[in-house]
Image 1 (tube, one colour):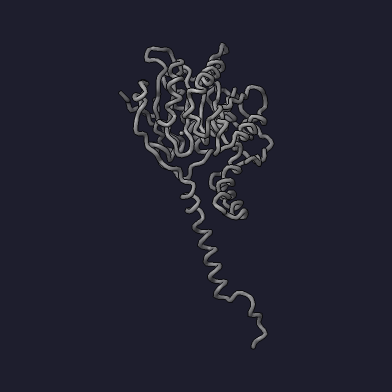
Image 2: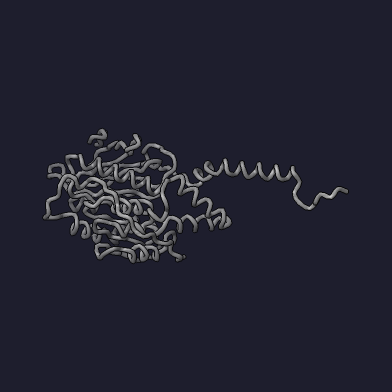
Length: 335
């Protein structure tokens, strides 16, 4: 017998182990992109199904992609109107958000509904993320501000779930938005994703690595884009709407976002007996949404045309994740 220690792994076993590790590292981007690929659900109906006038549009993004959209004018013969831009959540589309358009149109608002990239009938473009939702929302804001039906000085945004997080991120960048409505936003993306990954019985160290890789892919730190962080930098009145029975994003997360507000321009509206898809409960809070928007979107103060431009948000301290348990006319991108 030689003096070598026979208890350790053989060179062959080490080679096999290293091969598996290398393969895992090489495949990680593909596996993560597949795991977090948003389901694509194309629209089946149109606003006409709800007796709403509309025209279909294609909005060109800063990356050269196109977003599918519907513009619902306030009135065919009216002056340029205050306008609400509506963004769906993960796996949603413009059609799923049509229930919001009905009371808003009835109240005299123009409405723009659109599909984020990789959703509905918009172009595909890599990995979807909260920052990309926000980019699409800002491109939609810039596009709609050029439409003759729209008053570019009176623009508000409304989003659901991931779209709500994008609304708050956008509100932290655009100081002249009239108002923002966040529906069922999560407080911190790392908290949400960790909860999902841990439910799959993935070991904590692997979860940590996956989260760091996703930050690298989306080119953003979760702390910087977390709604509990961006709410501190919101430059307009914000209404946080959240179902009290939300099992996907617990109501406590709405409380956390609200607790981090910088002033009383941020309001919290609980929806009793409503879950994450509180779109289905629109009849319970449509009047509250219209009242909030009417209160803040109409102003006697004239605004300059620069109000629709983005700005660099100031630095702010990060927040930690909480621990608590969605006859037409084709128009160009120039409107």
